[in-house]
Image 1 (cartoon, rainbow, N blue to C red):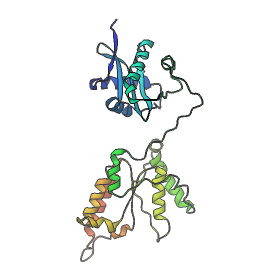
Image 2: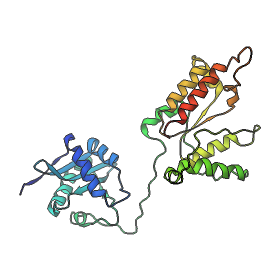
Image 3: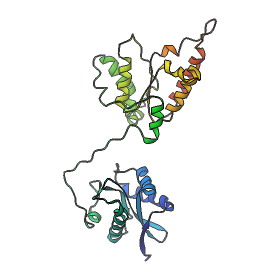
Image 4: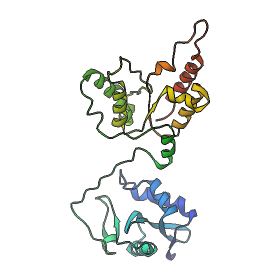
Length: 294
């Protein structure tokens, strides 16, 4: 039988790590850590693997900060044996020891066995609940959001919208729910609108509704002001185009253009409206924006 040995993770192991992650998580619909997180920790944090010849038969991946370490992935092929599991955990602990960790912790699904961990000195804490929140914006999006003056709004703004029950119900059913639960919308053949026109006199809640929709979806909120779009030196149409190019770097966004009539006047007339070029630019941008995912 080919001897099994433990070594540090190499970049060439990535394909086999992906395959092993798929085997280990196939019974678990909601793995604690996603494949993307495991790959990132393999490349940037701490990872050891067990190999037999050219075959990777196990892996342990961890990350640590502020005296707290977490095992983000641990798995072996079915016939690797308990000795391989124990050796992997021990090797990972040694690799992370220079971090000065006070604790090394792991979260595992209920159906998964505990043997490998308890045999290596891990203690089980009962009556513990695991909670998580997906952050509404990723690190790579922060600069883009700042550039267009966008922000993350506090939760529950939707619940605080009082009155206008009919309008709220309409937006909830036609816009918010299909966007918040795309799998449900796809199942029932509902295509959510990608652009909505809110109209009414000042003070009737247009901005409040737009902010509430962003809060309800947990998406960044970007408000574009026509007066500011023209400040960049490239004119109103250029400022509009540049803003949408930056917004396109966000995975999701609710973009609100207040007083839109200032940049979307009726086309035509003799002579043509001086803002007709801006209107044309806006129509092209909105059409392109609506065709994009998110």
